[in-house]
Length: 584
Image 1 (cartoon, rainbow, N blue to C red):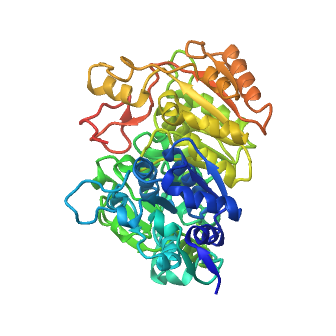
Image 2 (tube, rainbow, N blue to C red):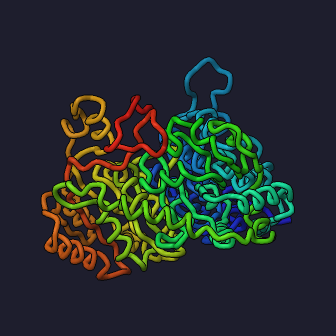
């Protein structure tokens, strides 16, 4: 039986699990692990410039590949900096294994009535437990192989999510005799796990419906079932609406695509949701940003809810038929069953008529300067070579959800449940490594981009082909819009007391090609169209190189349509006024 130093075994085990890259920021309690990565050479170690950036990069890679992302941090502040991305993985069902260094076992305070014994000793396990599937501290070096297997199994199984392993420094340097780590494959979908009566009842309901609708959420991608969903949707012939995290379940121009629903959904999509007589929910938890507050109104139609987590079914929207199943297994079962044999062309025509009456690009038709919906449509059309679009959090996130155009196979990554600004740039780094250097587009606001702007150095050092677009409205726009609606336009800390840098000059300081498109006051028309086309052509002039395009948009730009809180899903601002202040 071979002998391993524990830190060497950890690296070899990661490789056996299919991990190709791990992300970190150096720290003393990681020294043994860092040295093992260097000597073993089986997993590429990517050095980042903040632990949050490292963990978001691991999350981006996991979202692209389905293999648990791996990030490392030292004890104390390094470990606590992992908590936000850890929560992002937990809420958005992303498999990850986080490894933290810890002080030597004899330096742990244990039950002593003191705050800390070892330098930077911090009880990261207790902090992480509420936002992890599991968090463990390794006390016995011999248990490392079993704990690593369990961590990866747990991260991938059921509803995916993060697991934390806290490794004291003296554990890392112990030598153990254990078998060589064995490579393990992800199990294939098993239609037999799905109850036949659920599939039969669903197909019977579709056959008897006049206006059925599929609602797809991020759970489909979490299950690795993107292609299965596309095939199942086409077999059923049912129009598809999506949540924000289900944005890339269908190509933008797919004939069954009926847009994004929810608080900032496309107006015609929310009308379709309000008008359907059968709703089939796959991998979406029907949270308040999808349904608004009128859950009783939504429950007036027949609903099938497919989810791997039974706690999410009949949670907010009651009276649904529960289908407790993994999305991949369920979709495989649908493809194995006879097709309903119905055409819903008339229903699709109604949806297209609504779309023509309320186009997303016309929601801000009176806005002075660049229309962000129109710009994002053009960005997507110009970015056919991109492997993925990584979208930060803010108004631009909603404009992208409404309007970003993309094709089959292109991914849409954003932070949903945690909604963390600063997500997009480091997540795009991980997505780029996952795609073996294929270009990735970053879309961020001026506020969010500053939260992890230091990772421009990671982009520059690795010459990653990120096409970074910063929509600069010189404000924290989402909260500014909230203040406009509910606080008499007192813009404290969103406009007053806030300002951004010149991002093009910042990028230049890192040696990254940059350009500005000052379109905040540019009138609509042919001149603006030419300027946008020229800027996007420049952005893609060298697909293999990083580039940053700063785009000025009006500070007064709002995201419309927007659900009028307290009203049904079909009633949206600015045509309807809220009955209550939104609390989320």
